[in-house]
Image (tube, rainbow, N blue to C red; front, side, top):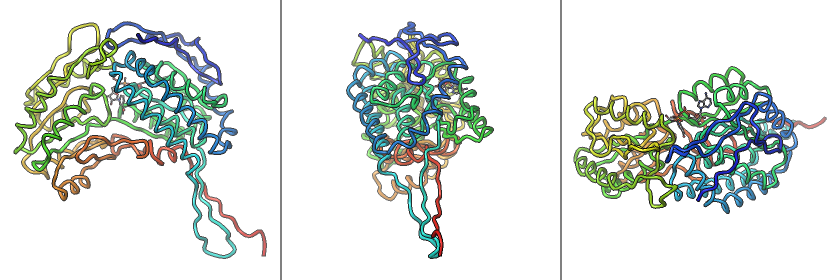
Length: 483
Ligand code: NAD
């Protein structure tokens, strides 16, 4: 039985249950039941969070990296110890099966550890001078300042953890605004940082309507950096706003990842991985493999096996049954979006091989769906589906597959399977994306940078880049005092 916590904000070191702008309902997507009421921040409460982050910045940024690391390490340890119970809250809020939630949280812990350690490791550099009068040219990485962190619901612990840990490790303070439907996951994460000993004002948590909150926080002179994960459309809006106020902006946006399966691939391995990974988190993953481009020699076998595996996926309420493979979509709008995707594919040559419909009931369920042979220029193959629908298209010539793969404006993740070493290497080079997986579908680890190109955004989170993203580069040129 999951105990859903009373929802609060955290501003200037205080837990606040009273949202001066009212409350909003939180709904369990498996049942449609209201499970909580979340306080919404008023403008005055946002201003209090901004003031707290601004006031705390001078001392937090001057705190030695080793001390910042010690706090982050304690936070990661607390989160690790609570992984099981927080995973159950994730399930209740956005429908992820518990085991996937635990995996997400443990990955977040490793990311917090890694970024915390960067606070001790990440020095600057000395550049040789051009004359004896000049003693040193020193490059350092200075914390940017208070950061606004805007996160979505699909990984409600791991995505915030990357941003919070990067910001705090680098010496920035932060105001964190999570997705409206996952406030408790955010709160339980923030509790770990608070209990780890974070000084007052360093991390603030606010809830409410995303548009007005983002506008207010970005426009404030206190804010120096804005980090956003979400859709490309909103990312463009927020980027324009950030530019108006000359704020550093980090967008991690949508994707529509291609998977090229060569005739030289280990087909059994490729199809097993694809059919499992596609439906993880009900396909609501920005790096989810979604456009399968398969060599015509192995196409029929790939489609048949992919569909057979897909039809065996157990769908249900993961809060009630731990053996469920795939839970609901996050909210009713995503079900409507999947219905549109299937209708569009059907109108563009696509054949529904398995699935294709919403599942009747109280929750927001959609069948795991495979669509064979949709036209490559159909809307489905161009716009990010962000749900449990896979499209599979045959190709004659691998150069064509690369051209189709690279033809969209997105460029987050791309994948290819080939057991021919030269071909695999060439595909890795030819695919245009921020992250490429060859013969596997994982493109993320605590130590590696995560980010896209084109309409998928720019910059990186995670890895040393995830720390440097919260810093400004500074040069000090030191000359002899006399002589
Ligand atoms: P949505 O646009 O309603 O919301 C997505 C997220 O953006 C939410 O977390 C929300 O809080 C935030 N948001 C919405 N409007 C905002 C605004 N004006 N200012 C600041 N933040 C705002 O979409 P949805 O139906 O919940 O999610 C589906 C779409 O969101 C998908 O198409 C996908 O592209 C995108 N998405 C991407 C990621 C990712 O990891 N890149 C994660 C979740 C959602």
